[in-house]
Image 1: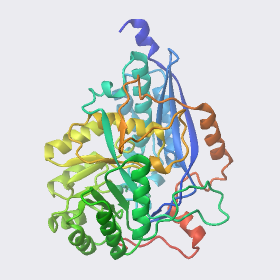
Image 2: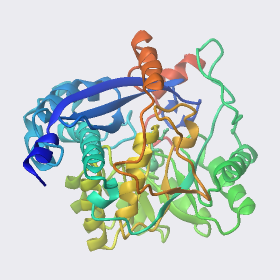
Image 3: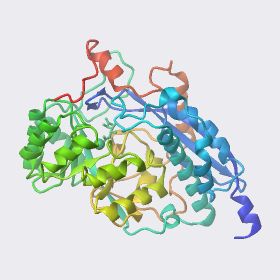
Image 4: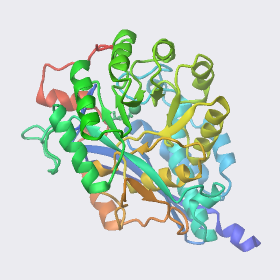
Length: 435
Ligand code: GKR
Ligand code: MG
């Protein structure tokens, strides 16, 4: 690399644009998705005028950290990421945001200062890799050592769902219809296969009593014999209930995801069943790995490259999992196409990825890209174009940002319980375990 190209990689500006994105009324154990959900879009601009894109969670607690972390990047090169990560802990995190405990209201595991920072750094890292790839004419997967597959498999992410958001709540319409019983879940799964060709299915559970969710998974097994099935109640069940569900669905489950909360309880379930357990809640930081793996509490870790701190950390996680003989894959949260591209690039480089990743993307009718990413046969093709291989649509970005600016603050922090209380004012956050 010449001195001038090296200088050209220096970050001159980082643009941070919070947006609100339409989201259907998807149910989970903590309530229902709000009609619009916050995301943060990151643009890293280099001295050469190249712009790299990143995306992460957009709630206030992430936005608070985004500006100070982004400021530390300015003046450094996009290929100088290790230093940014090393310096990041000098950025203070509001103590009120940190509990050190599993945040029952968050579905994303333990809340630590480090994890909040990593969730923001992930978007800066992805944006830097996108800019670096564009500058060098290389795809992001090449910067991670190269792809080992040309397409990444995703699973259909099924949700219990209302037909629409509560009356009177401003929202976008969707054409998925309601899914509130086994027949509705099977119908939703059929649409997913027709529209995107998915061949494996994950059902978000913890919404109805376990018997009803067992019936829904049984109905899926009957409708799609032999297809991999997962059920994820986000820790809503006791150990006893988890074991009962595992027993009743042992012949059809690929894995049971976060049946119960916390490593000790997961270890108890794991000891009592042959059904593999997966998690995106009890192992969400490197610090949690030792206890979970030595106690054999989980057999599959589902990365979320956002809170694991980006694509390189996701590869570190995969290497640790490989060492311990633990499987690895990815779960998702409401996200747009930049995150899907990032997930696809890193997933393409992980040799030990033996389970389809899940993605909320089909639920998002809106995006900030000029072209939506397509699923073909349930897979996303790995782009070989420079960087992530996606292009920002500035008009769409401005439109979704305007929605964020116009919001009075009620939607800027995802709160599924508050959204549920609009439909049912008496609804309270269920105690854990719920069943
Ligand atoms: O979108 O309702 C949801 C999910 O429950 C999400 O918040 C979870 O983080 O999908 C995630 C999961 O696998 O637990
Ligand atoms: Mg999960």
